[in-house]
Length: 83
Image 1 (cartoon, rainbow, N blue to C red):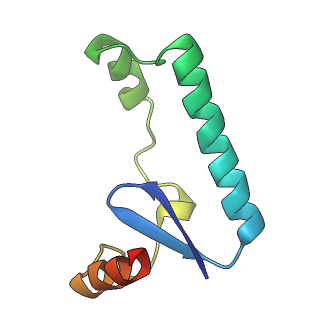
Image 2 (cartoon, one colour; image 1 turned 90 degrees about the horizontal axis):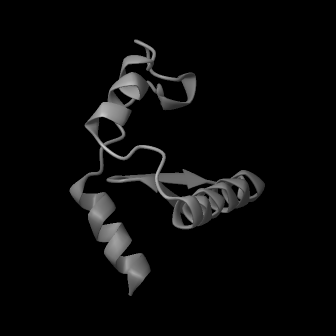
């Protein structure tokens, strides 16, 4: 299995290497655009309309039946993988 860190503090575990590769490429693209053109949101006044436009319900990809918060055993496994 491969792992990706889409946002802190959560890890995603997947066997779908193509989807993982696409996500990494997209993240790198956004980082490059931000470096080249600067951030889209420059302050609280810019952020407010974006926050107000968010849906009330989470995206289906963010919904799950189990609690996905990291546990102590996750942290232990992460340290073992880093060693």
